Length: 464
Image (cartoon, rainbow, N blue to C red; front, side):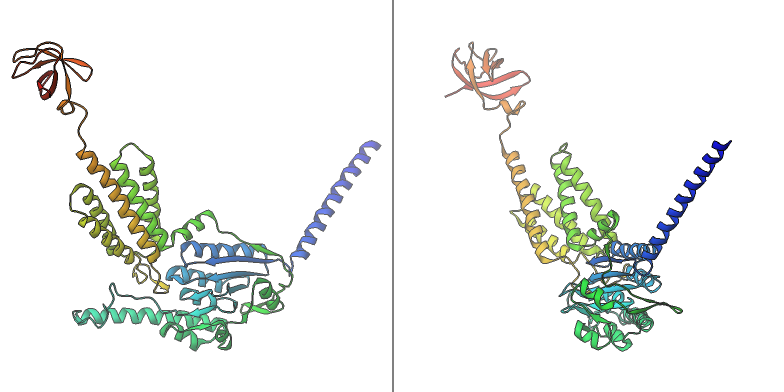
């Protein structure tokens, strides 16, 4: 029994040592994590869309779960969708971890929707040479010169549009004033940024109390905000300890990367063009499979992009009509006129394709958010050239002499293997012996030419 007691004591001692070790490890982890949870960093470079919004929301959740000192958002954006902007602002205002928005690198911007995001941060920082503002909701006419001064517009219609725009503007002002008041920022400038599209540089923003700091880069930022008190809630304030903190960069998920990639008007234009070309090439050459498969994938991605970017239906229709004219040029001899018209409509459709003033998906973005001419013009020329190239070979094939079937026998020459007369005869044509007839007798061994075919009977004449 003595050995049994010793074994029991040994087992109990082992468990006690293991338990003490786990407690020490957890205690050290808690001590090291307390006030030193590191700094999480995300980078938003481009438009504010469902991909970038989901990226920031998930990053805030991860920073809260990590117990990070703060979440730094490196921001460079021309603006983006209203709904996604509101989702990001709501989450930032309720975050349980300090959110630091850093407009970076130099020459970056926090325009339109970016203004709301920057002002919603617990700490707003800009790099030298950056800018912020121009937060008025976009409302652009379809064509230049078409606006409230249009004499053909009905008064009631114009008044209704004015009322709608006034409502949108007032609602936007209320949103940014609420953000500025919550964060203790310049409310007067915030209102002017919306109503008058004011835009200012980093130095002016600091002087106007729109932002809190100016920093050269991330290390400089972490050095300057170290020891800064941040109010997370009405009764909760934390002191940042960021000097020498470990930096963890949070990457986008595959889905977020895809949505962010598709939120580019230039990518949409390229995908739609490649998709149309791929499908049409599959019709021209059935069974090649690859062009059709690539075209179908590109079109699906283009349609997904249209759910992220506000699209003007008129621009899309113009592009489709332009492609239709390219196809018509292949089959109709119009001396290139249809191709030229198709190129003009295709390019015009690209210019009007993106609608930042969409009522379905309102955008806070720079008015220049559209497909770039440096993409439209080369793409239009390339699409037109491809269709003309295809048309050239189609026309050449149509004009080429037929070399198969009965039509392919006409005009061929051969040799009379027997006398050929109006009743009978045999000729050797294209490696075979054929029954033949001739209006005038042809001696055996003479050269003959096929002028008519009736089933398996050849009508021939004497060849020169």
